[in-house]
Length: 247
Image 1 (cartoon, helix red, strand yellow):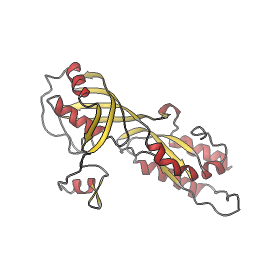
Image 2 (tube, helix red, strand yellow):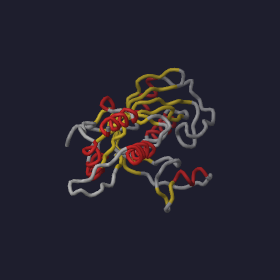
Image 3 (cartoon, helix red, strand yellow):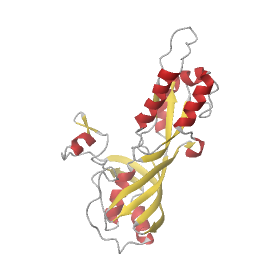
């Protein structure tokens, strides 16, 4: 497998490449894919395959990021889409912040903070001790505001209608839950975990264990092993490179 972002021609990019993107805040993972797909469709001329036949541009990603999360999005094109399932299995690393004192229905800032929970008893040591209880093999219940399929519909659609639905717990693993700092009610963290882990659920559960309430206030994926955010391009950089190759 070639290194990410190492395609040397437009044809190689279309035929099968591995791309690392730094997803911006506010975009869904599919927004990033659609931006690239739309650019290829409307701005570039896709070269024919080795038999002279027109090529259909295939693209997919290995691991979804919520709109309020930034960071590493692994994208595959062409024949490389066949290995997406293998790439998704890699351990993930996240950094971000958790705000104490209020919860939200979505466990992050997609919905408005509510409640007034005690925080004066919280210390860096107490939050670190609480985080230790959220490491190892765990059964985690995904948030109601998630893309989980329940009875044929996305859970978040029912949640936005105010419906209460029961989402089964799933098996995950958290190898590291490191609290880096705690100041003015906000904890900075680093988490290394298995695929399928909802970081906002960990934030919500951390608040409970610490005797307060909490929600995820920022999130960035820094690794999806074996890949690192330091090797990622912005979407704009990718499109500029493709444009130059098409000239």
